Structure formats: structure tokens, C-alpha cells
Image 1 (tube, one colour):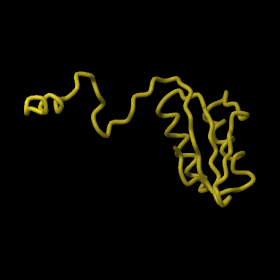
Image 2 (image 1 turned 180 degrees about the horizontal axis):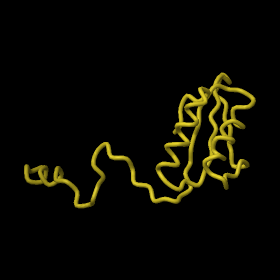
Image 3 (image 1 turned 90 degrees about the vertical axis):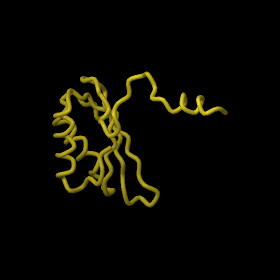
Image 4 (image 1 turned 90 degrees about the horizontal axis):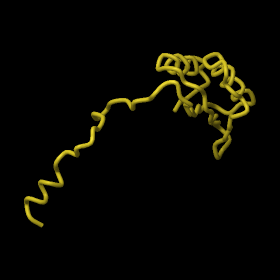
Length: 106
């Protein structure tokens, strides 16, 4: 392979890419999937549902999916909500973390 071909492969692509470390661009409003992980408890999914309902008045609780960890120590609650903006999502994440029962929100 010639040196010229190697240089061609190393050139930046012509497509517009997001800079490294930049958050992805989201077009609001949109359906936004969320996974909430916390300690397993009978009322964990209900607590998550109550918090999400305060931030999305049209949230459908029947869409919740609860998955227990292999040892049944943790639960993950998967849901899709209607996101209207970044401020709404930040407030939701903050309230979920403030419960003290949530380990991670993805």
C-alpha cells in the first residue's frame, strides 16, 4: 500500500460529526426510554412510576417493565416517557436520585 493511500484513509470524513464528548442532539418533544436501577423492593416500580408521573402527566404506567437481577438484589424498571425538554429530564433524574433508592438512571 502506498503512503498516499494511507494518508487518504486518515483524512477526516466530510460528514458533520459531533465533537468528542458532546452530548447527543435530541429533538424535543420525543418518546424517551429510561432505565432506573435500584434495590429490589415490592414498591420500587410504584415509586418510580409516581416520580415519572409528576414529570409527565400523560405517562402510561402499563408500559413499565420490571426486571430483577440474577440474585434478586436489584431491580431495573424500564419505561418510555414523553420528554418535552432537557430541563424536564434533569429534574426527573434529580428527583429519582433524591429518593435514595435509585442507584442509576440510564
